[in-house]
Image (tube, rainbow, N blue to C red):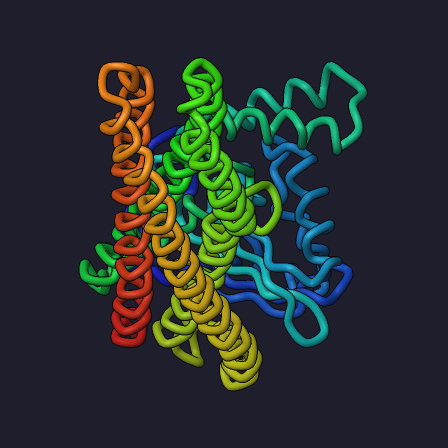
Length: 417
């Protein structure tokens, strides 16, 4: 068997197959998982001649150390028309093994699979996690859903909202490692990505602070009414101020809950859309790496029908390019909406400021009798200043997110393999 010897990574453990840091293992199957095409890297690592691989089930390379739940999740995702990513441990017919980060996407008549050598920081977590999941599957008769729940908890302990977020972050790490290995890394794109994610986290924090400060305001009109009752009959104006403040603040609270409450939370919506957009962009970059691998395999050194595989790959790549651009564009729209709403809430706060000033004037008119009212107005001052600052920060972050998305997309277009 003749193999491409251009690898640049030696095995680190006994039994590990030689898998280069710049290589991409490629295969295509029908809808049942039967291999229709595979490149030279696939055949070399599988330890098989092309004639014994084509027409065989793809699970001929499945290693028992990969938990069953991963393949259950894979088929669930693929049957729903979704791309799937996971770390996998594969086996060779020679008795060896090798780890990969695998990306599988639907294509005409089946699925395309690309696999690269993993080296990211999250990979170490995966190996211990898989060992734990494997023991659960062996010792307990649990349905896949229960094992998946355990997996979700584990990635949550690592600080990820879901397994999807975890594996998407892993894809970012592994693609960046591959791009560095082939000298195709784009630091400006990576900085833009980090800036957007950082701004998103900060926006979520500012939104939480606005809600917390505004919630604290809700008890102050009640305190003003209590003070007014003690000052009767001179407390009448204070009662009116309290009522006006309560009405105006309740209107603002309804607007706040409209974009930052349980339903319709714009920052969380934007986070979800951006996560999807970056995931799709990661798939797009991965497919581009497969195309680069095709370019390194001459017609005489592979069993692939290169023109046909390029045609199929091109169609899938175009699909994910369109989807990723659409998703990132949608995130920009949501960011703009959040900026507008935050500005609207800030303008409504000016109305509350007017009522607050009236309370300050009334406190001064009452003299020493209005000391309690003055302390209450001081609380309003503090909360108003804080809310205004949080809203301004939120508006600035929205602009930073939009700028970062533009920068990311521009740099992504420049990174062509």
